[in-house]
Image (cartoon, rainbow over the protein chains, first blue to last red):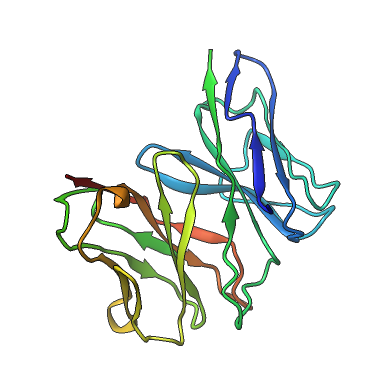
Amino acid sequence: DGGITQSPKYLFRKEGQNVTLSCEQNLNHDAMYWYRQDPGQGLRLIYYSQIVNDFQKGDIAEGYSVSREKKESFPLTVTSAQKNPTAFYLCASSIRWQVDLYSNQPQHFGDGTRLSIL
Amino acid sequence: AQKVTQAQTEISVVEKEDVTLDCVYETRDTTYYLFWYKQPPSGELVFLIRRNSFDEQNEISGRYSWNFQKSTSSFNFTITASQVVDSAVYFCALSEGSGGSNYKLTFGKGTLLTVNP
């Protein structure tokens, strides 16, 4: 079945460490996204990529980095510069960046990765 | 700037009650898209509906219905005869529309719905 796979489901980081969250999609979608979810805060956009080899900062990009070398993969690195990394991270994709007027294609989400600090 | 407000942080109902989740949005765009997503305890977001700004028809899908009113900038979601399986966090979201709408979504903070047996 087509979908988005995020791994691992749970991740622990020591102070000063970088960690990378994996996001893979087999939906042949052009656009991919990373969101951060904190309790009571809803989802906030970290980075997005409209197409392979391109990515843009979202609303809370500081302390994070991404790459988009392959269409199906959009890994997120949480660097040691991110002072409060404990959160639930969700990856998403859409068939293209622009919302299609005539189709009901939504933004698809993965199951998320919960990152905690040891 | 775009903004989505879900004023109800938590709602608790008894099974078979009807419940309405409120969503109020702000945007300067004339073309935009509104979404509702469900997040069950497992964590993934499940797409429920997308509504275009130029289509104010209300929509019904089984026990779910949506009331879109541009005059009040609201896109409310009603669950009729609620069930325990409806317990989840529900998010309303708005797409950025300047120059053509895209999937850079602005989310509300979500409403936690608990349906008790």
